[in-house]
Image 1: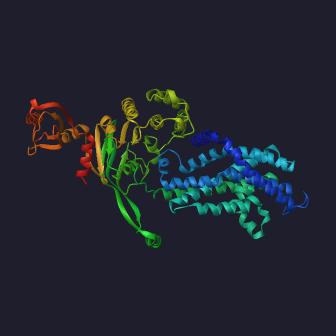
Image 2: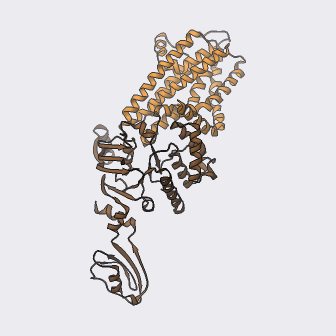
Image 3: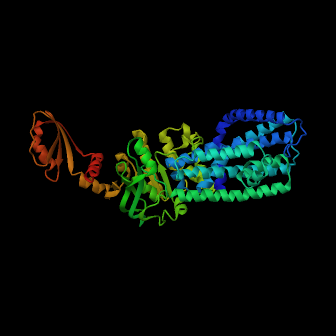
Length: 263
Length: 325
């Protein structure tokens, strides 16, 4: 475990070079939030109205959290990196090191997005306070639980994207798979909470990655309950095990197919 | 005792073949065709502890494929490999703690970090306690003369400095065998010489076995006592440098500036390489004729200036490649 924490630390050190890039990248996040904030303002007649169990304030905070999770994830970059490593044969240089490749990828990625996540969380919360002039009713313990579920959500997202990237062992380009995954998460979990969809779809979404990678932490942030928190953390642990096993299976199968000609 | 044992090792690659043009492209989607390329074909050799061995061959000969099989990166089709008693396929993790690899064309350092931070990183991934890492860094810093730039980000280092750091990074965990794949590629002659000296010093100091591939004859000549030449996936020569030179250096080059022209056209054991009237360059086959004999033919009184040299090792190696084609 120590080596993976060290990998995260090393990646954070390396990434501190790009703090200003991250801050500028926040402009895109801010614009997105501004549009959605105005959309909710238009849909809600007043702040106390409930639509599918959410007030306008809750809806805005929900989107703030899901967008922080999604935009700091840097999924496309991770998928492209793994896909490129597999196709170019660069992956081979990691094979003869005494670490698990999946663990290495996950650690480098978590380290990579740590600074970004912190800055986006700080600026996102600040934007929420600016727009809404209020903060959800959360205790310090509640906030810690939300943070834990957010870290688990990011880890699951990263593992799913690593699995998608590793598909490059078998097909030329895993980009289309990532595109489909990103759109599912964006539409079904980031912009709208699960409760906004018809019952039948809600049932499916409750067992889908959407529940654990975006809905879960955001739902707890806007409407915390211990029952919900336990069910989300449990689902996240199960998802981590499933996603890791899938990654491991694809990697084990794929690594035997490596053809690296020449030096 | 052999530290590396390779027996009857083979590896083939399946390569897709495509007919030319659009029709060929469409055909290859519907009914792809493949051909089998034998990258390594039944090779065997052994390496003793503490040896510096040159593993050389032309491009596409199978050098890198062999190294990658020895370092657990590729799976062999046939044959067995034992490195320090480990099977690279089954004992990948255990072996990784015992070997180091430097690929001259591939960076393994984190470019935004300093060499010091990189070394600490490598120490952590090889599970070395903090104190031991610090001690090792200190030791290698002196040996590889890194004081000046150990705290400069890697991206700001020259290629020579970077390669030195790459080698140090691969030595942090004190590997017993170090695989160097073209470590001096792209370096200027002075830096090359410096890297060679450091590699030699490291071999002497830590008794590290070094398995080196290089296209640079200087690396081979100055570092290695034994050479394995591989071509078309097969070992074509496995001998000591001394023997290689002894057997293949039975030819001398005589470059002479003459007062008068000399005709050596039909002389046995002499091949004329260049004849520009008063400047003559000949190759003397010493198994057929001694150098003294050749000089007599030139007539010492007729010679203004003379230079007698061995055939460059580069030419010898090229000849070995060609003869086995």
